[in-house]
Length: 263
Image 1 (cartoon, rainbow, N blue to C red):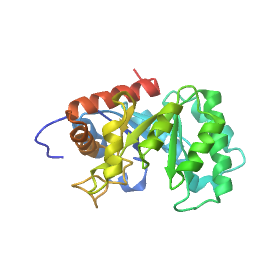
Image 2 (spheres, rainbow, N blue to C red; image 1 turned 45 degrees about the horizontal axis):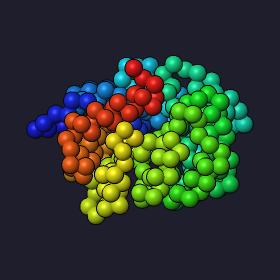
Image 3 (cartoon, rainbow, N blue to C red; image 1 turned 135 degrees about the vertical axis):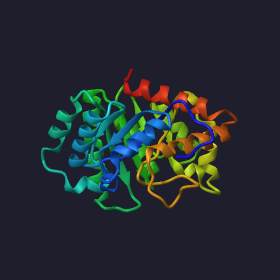
Image 4 (cartoon, rainbow, N blue to C red; image 1 turned 30 degrees about the vertical axis):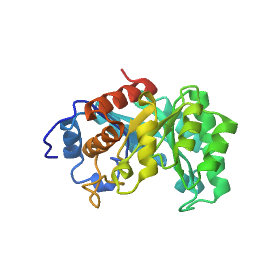
C-alpha cells in the first residue's frame, strides 16, 4: 500500500490466508501486512482441512495465530470424530481460539438444525478447553443470541466476527462477554447502522478485521482483500469516533492480545 501516513500498531482479527487466492503471493501478503504495522493476524479455520492449514501458517509466520473450527456452511459435512480432531487441534500452542462457528441463514448451505447442533457442540468444546470463540452470524441474529444466552460462552468469551447488527444486538453481545469486530463494510456508503456501532462500542471491547480475501474496504472494494487493508478499517473507525487511527489500532491490538492471551 502506498500510504501518506503509517499506523504503528494494528491487528487483523479475522483472515483466511490459507485460501487458494493467496497461493501465488502469500509471503508477499504477509510482508505487506508487516510493513503496514500489523503485529498480529488471527487466521481462521472453517473446516478441518483449513484449520490444519491455519495451524501450519501460524507455525510458519511468528505474528500469525490460528483458530480452528467448523463454519455453518460445512456443518453437514463433518466426520463423526470431528470434535475429537478439533480437541486435539485446540491443544496446539499456536491455536488461540475455536471457530469460526455459528449460524448462516442467508446461504443455508447446511440444514439449520444441523448448523445449530454443530454450533452448540463446538461451544461445549470451547467451554471445556476455555478458549475464546469466533462467532459467525449472518441473517441469524436472534437464533445466534438464543444459543449463546442459553448454552453460555467460555469464561474467556469470544468475538462477534464481522458484526452486522445494530446497537441493541451489540449490547447483548457485550453483556455476554463478546468483543465486537468491525470489518470492511463499515467503509461502504450509507452503512449508517454499522457506523453507529463502530462509534459507540467501548474501545476496550472493539476489534477490527479484514475477513480477507472477502469484504475489501473502500477505496479498494472489488479487489482481493488482504490484511494490510485493515488500516483502512482503522481509519474509518477512528473518523467515526473522533480519534486517531493510531489510537484505534493500538487499542484493538491490545484487546486482541488480552482476549487471546498473547504476550
